[in-house]
Image 1 (cartoon, rainbow, N blue to C red):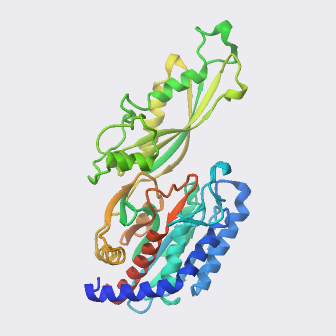
Image 2 (image 1 turned 90 degrees about the vertical axis):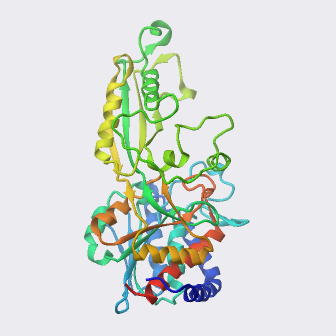
Image 3 (image 1 turned 90 degrees about the horizontal axis):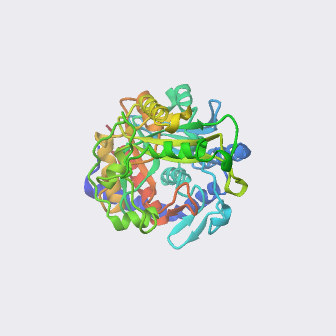
Length: 456
């Protein structure tokens, strides 16, 4: 399916020249998207999420897409665009999402989060990397062909990924015929390093729950009963501490682990990219990439208790915490949830009463880089970046990988990247490396050209 090296290089040079001409407009597309605060987790931004979908639809129409619709299945609005396939050519589905995470404390941002701001070789703003850059990559690749790509292209831009894609499966089933494709390009992952592209082949799943601990039927004076009556917050802290062993490994029985790809993650790089403070130990033991990609990880991500500013000498009767559990590839989410609930219910100290409310679950994914479409992608990315891509895992979750594979089992799923290790997706001062962004646009355009030149 791949072109000869000389022909591939000539196609690359032609597309690179075309993207040079388009580049100001490519950056304008991204800035226009970043300006919309499409925070799907906040109902106050529902109108912004709708506006974001409408803007994506308008940009697709402007890029020559003849069939653009906004679709939904009771959740966030998604955009579905379709370019018909030339005779004998395959159809490629390009995925990204237009919703973003909340900003957090605005005072901590160096520049306004919903204004795309360039500083050096990076573009700052919420969604610049996760995942409005993915949309901009697709638009750039399509514009490179003047609205007439050499393959059939379906563009699917989701609007609720940042809240766990609760209606995605229904949406895919409702539009299964329109979304059927030979290969799926999911531009929502990370590269191995700046200048080094990657295809993600394993993804951890995720689930969450809320655990409530009760020890008293009413609050007590700590001087009168302290030392005898257990307070719920201390009991909760001791319970949460049992989730890890002394080295920081997950201590929940019944969870799946597997070996990772064996990539070296140097300690100095890990320290720089993670921001772990000097002297603070890392969790767990064994290879870093195993701990990040192919083992479970459990975190306490929220806590309800008396705030420090309002604290008095009182024993709290109840306290609760929200727990997030990342699942290794191959783990059944229901079995993992059962294991977590069982652990919490059997490790409460002092006979404290424990109630667990189960939350959302996302299935782990695997996207092996095999077959003719994968070979074409590796060749195109190597030519575009000038270095061969590596295969990596991701500690985060992209639930639609499993959904696409379930509905379209014969198709190839390619998980590509717009993020880099310093992009701070979901965090303060999220940013996009513009050099890598340019390479991503060229590599996707080159992939479409390659598949159109030599058809399966």
